[in-house]
Length: 247
Image (cartoon, rainbow, N blue to C red; front, side, top):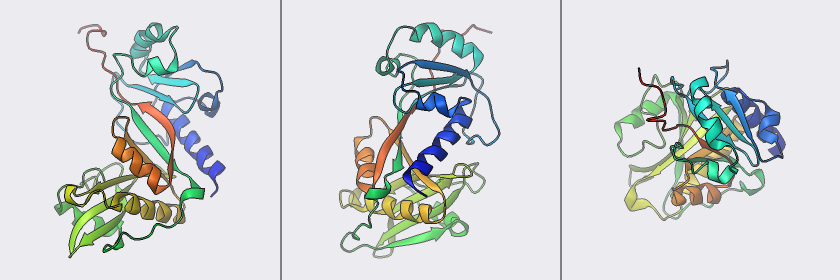
């Protein structure tokens, strides 16, 4: 799997999720593309509510995928503004940055002094659910629609102090999350665990991706150190209180 194949596969999946086209995501023109949200076959199983709203950009164009009544609201509000201002609009509820692995930078990390890593397979992951403090790495639900499929774990004197987990988000992509207990941070463990899990995910034929909020600088640094690059930005929820007709 090379860099182009990774990018193409991810764009194909995002086009399914948003109900747009790959050409929309690749557009060189800075403009808005409005599409009606649909639960297409193969869509990643994230919640789609009645007033669904999602806004995503991989560079220039901005794809707005939303319920019909929401499109009627946002189209005039986005008319005449640029991409950066769009993601600062009052109805935008948070921004998430998503990263993909840079294959040239995924060289093996040196193990942080005094620590080692072990891989935990899917059938053994439920035993980790008894631990607290790892909700970014684990779903804590054996029946989750995006099940935990692999974890990289590190210990200190037998105690688990860091976990990077991968969830099966769709047929080709696993999402990577990381948690390190507060007293063990700033030791390079987060980037190390994410890197190990990323390389193992690629070895198994899946594309790993990493998501974090636009305000979480430490998490963004972890992604960069682990060998990732920023690939797209997405707002997955809108605040339209007062804009929708009352029942």
